[in-house]
Length: 542
Ligand code: N01
Image (cartoon, rainbow, N blue to C red; front, side, top):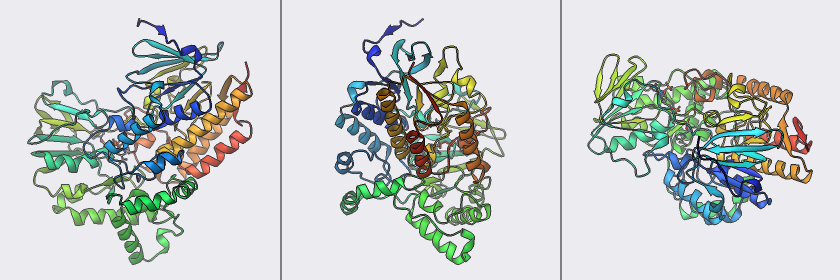
């Protein structure tokens, strides 16, 4: 039994916030401005969430910096200068630390504190949260700011423990960095993380073997420094851009909605538009070329084939090019990757693409890796094999209600939520960007702000009305889950074996998790629910 002790402040807390990334920090700030006492508990040894852990070479955001940042404070957005169009991990982490200092949040954040369980007592209306160190915190409300891509997954290859070299996961990268000079590296995985790290590692490594199971779509980032002129002109109208972002499905300004189908225009015109988007860079821009790329397979195929032709034209060896052509999913139905010279990397003499779809990895050996037909000598292995997305970090905490359900049991067949904010049967527990909300299909910072604002207003409402208990109704949850599925089924998204449906985790129930109707529409629904005295939630004063 761990040495349990009640923290001195525990009985005074209004809310416990789990996680100190973008979501946890804003939740802390917002609750404090409303006079609510909150304590943040963070597993990492410092703040930053995703941007603390994902330090792999080449890590950067695929949403433009001037958008992927907090909008709630005019001072913050005016005083911070982003060096590049797409910010590197180190710059985002620097920004997050600046925000924490600027808003004086650190005294209320306990780092190095991993939450292992959370239990709700219906008699006292309190959550008891226990950490891996054996500390116990109590509060009437608990807010999970645990992130959507925060539980890294290393595949269960036999022999990993025998490997004599060094190995890393993209989402648990060492703080001090890794020098790959003069070494033989194997990168496993070609999702966003792999596609970002491969060109950078290739520059250092003596040999780089890329183990690809599924070819992926990627478009150029066209990253560049933000000039003082761009910075100034954006900041002059920052409010305007933020307001515009709120009216968009992605929470990102500067992309006028397309009005035409890809099939309405002549092939030459389409080619010209795709070429222009390719040259401009960015995934939103590319997928926003036409209004039906994510709902009409024929339209989508025009964009998919454009990118395949680009790969054919970039990669010199036709056999390697052929292997790199994505064919198992429509473009955009998995996260469309952004790269900086990814396909070009395969023209380098020190880089070898290995198709582990036709020749699967069988085991890790002391000196490298073995597929069904070949053996590879490796000094280092970098796993870019993804995360148990959207539900992983929530289910990693043993959450239960006394005399009620455990979250893990309730979600055994997939997550069920009302608005992605709460789940029926588990009162006073909010999720920031939970499954069933737009979250990963948007600018995460915009979605986080929308959720935190809603939750903070809700807590204020409850306090004003002396209500101690809020819970999602089962019927509201059932309707919401059906709606989330209906919206997804009207798109091409479910056609991909993506982490959006949990396909990357063996045995995980196949459920489409994000809400893809758009953040603008979702915001209206949440506002209406609140305006109607939290329709679909049960509120009780005792
Ligand atoms: O993970 P992924 P990620 N044997 O799940 C392969 C965000 N992100 O970390 O497709 C061999 O996408 C797997 O193959 P397959 C972003 O939202 C954002 O790259 O399952 N291979 C796949 O190629 C992103 O979508 C940014 O066949 C195996 C890869 O590993 C999300 O994080 C940057 C395997 C996993 O790809 C996750 O991206 C980075 C096995 N047993 C991440 N198991 C930006 O903002 C898995 N794979 C730019």
